[in-house]
Length: 77
Image 1 (cartoon, rainbow, N blue to C red):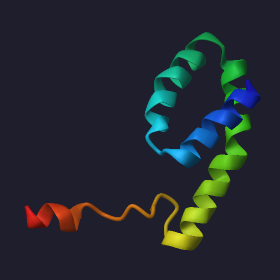
Image 2: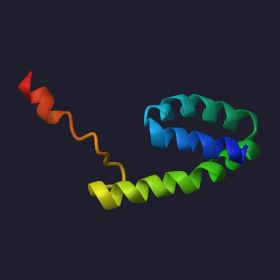
Image 3: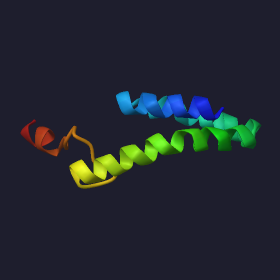
Image 4: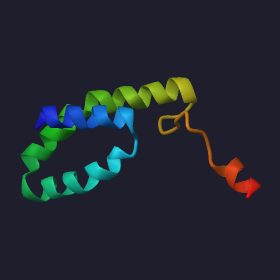
């Protein structure tokens, strides 16, 4: 299960939207088998921490990304 967590986190590196798919999967796993859910988190944590540290170093915030803000776009509408 730790390997599955690793690959889920790798998919988040490619596309941030895959976290939407991970949430229901993770919640159902927590309800059925907490041991495997913990293994999933342990497997995903190195990549997730690396991504957060990268975002902080490059974009100035842990949850900031290179996509920018939609505020300027919405103001033009």
